[in-house]
Amino acid sequence: MAAPTVTASLDASTYSPGDPITLTVGYADPDTRPVTLTIVLTDSQGNSSAPVRVTAVIDPLTVGVADDSGRAWTKVSDTGTTAVYRAVA
Image (cartoon, rainbow, N blue to C red):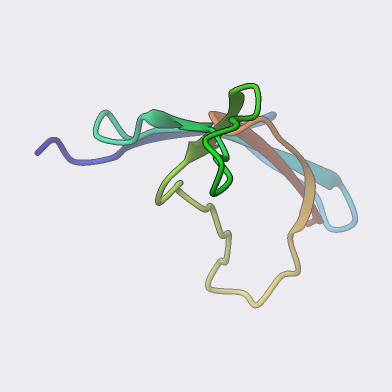
């Protein structure tokens, strides 16, 4: 089993009080794969429905951000591989 990976980058190297901070987090888990379920219903007389397919990701990763100053981070977006957060310096 491979370990999840994460990268993080800020939009600047220094901030003054009140400056907006944008944090971009890239993340992946090589062991997480989508699963496709195919469902067919059959009644007691042997009549069957058309197949229905549903795709789901089992045990997806979640991202949380905290820092040692107690700053509040707000999630701006999350694609499932890249998350963007904002805070104020």
